[in-house]
Length: 205
Image (tube, rainbow, N blue to C red; front, side):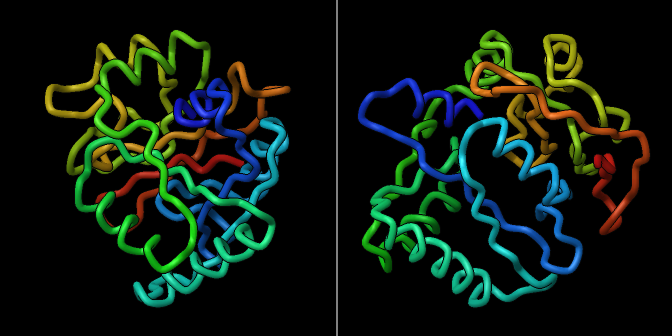
């Protein structure tokens, strides 16, 4: 969300769409496990159209790349020339995205690259954005953090070695309110489930 906030406050950039990948069968965001219905509400609250890219569970890299290529081609046809990614410091992921983008006449943009995750987490909270932790990798962070609000208390409680932005996959969040939102996104989230042995999810609807 900090990336979108920065793009909106920079005159040379004009965000026109949000893009995310979802599991086709469950219609939930991969890794975050957020339902498509909530993603649509979030996009509406942000005033941007959502471009969902449906993927089958267990899709190969080739299938993933083909799906992304089709989605980006549809944006290219509408005159979109740049795609922004929220990567911060994982060099291998950035290199992968840059390599894939070479096949498409669109420029990759990394507005947060190289920034301090401590500063980014502080910026997110200080600007008034609100989020809840919806996925925990229990090999890196205790499942008791699941469902907690992303706030000052959370940052104080995070163990040493856990990135405050979850950049190493320690946790994932759902942002439901903040300066760019026309209205907060309402949701319910009480039940939790465990998948793939170590990932714990807050079932939000």
